[in-house]
Amino acid sequence: MSMRVLFAGTPEMAVPPLKRIAEVCPIAGVLTAPDQEVGRGRKQAPSPVKKEAVQLGFPVFTPEKLDAAFRETVQGLHPDILVVVAYGKIFGPKFLELFPRGGINLHPSLLPRHRGPSPIPAAILSGDTRTGITVQKIDLRMDAGDILLQEIIPLTGEETTQTLTDLCSLRGADLLVEALQKLEEGTLTPRPQNEAEATYCKLITKEDGKIQWTLSAIQIERMVRAYDPWPTAWTLFRGELLKILRANVLFNLERDMGNPVSMLPSESLPCGKVIGVDKQKGILIQTGEGFLSVTRLQLQSRKALEFNDFLNGVRDFIGTRLGD
Image (cartoon, rainbow, N blue to C red):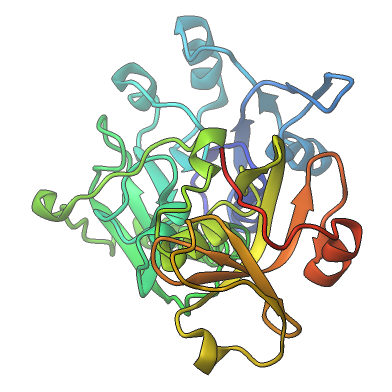
């Protein structure tokens, strides 16, 4: 293909699409977020996309603002099209006018469902049975542009945000290349989104991971998967932060449990109460509806542990109540 691409992306998810597009299109330049402070030493670190672009030998740009001076720089690159994967900023009309073929964006949902910055966690939290990836034309409204291509991804109910992000990244890379090929051939027919079907998701904060034990076990288990790897689902144990890293749902203890080692009386237990442990299913916690069986967890400033190892280090855990 002959179209010159300005690629815009920041996180690890955008790396496979950049590499895949670079195999078939000339890359005029790569636009990514400025270096960020990371770790305890607060050292400046480049984005995953910047690291990859430097390795591939592409010009890299990390502007704080897409102002007139930067627009002039982009114009000098003579790009034909803008390709965006999780860049993190909205593009204004003056910037989009720099691209004769416009701009396309990879969004990891079946638009118009889950418009916004966190579509993958949103699909898990909603209990969706399927999600997907969408290549859309960039519009001045977030994620509202016409649909060019879509691919459905069935969900099993075991996905985490990390595993689903990896899958969407790899499949999205191929879908973007297909879109670019068809755009160059003139064989794509844009399809407007149905505004009546649009749903929206918000930017996730650390506080979103805080478990409210009055929720059902189903809702909490979805939180555990949706907030992996960040901010993780968490609660408080004696004032310390406790991360719940892997969990399952139980409704009927007599039916679902195999080998109870220790169990409190079940009548009128408050939500968040650690009621027992099962050798196979893990630590059992009362919720607003059903029981959460936790198999992997991490106490503040300690390493993540399987539940048996955790209980060996916190021997009086059974019988405590989690939360504020």
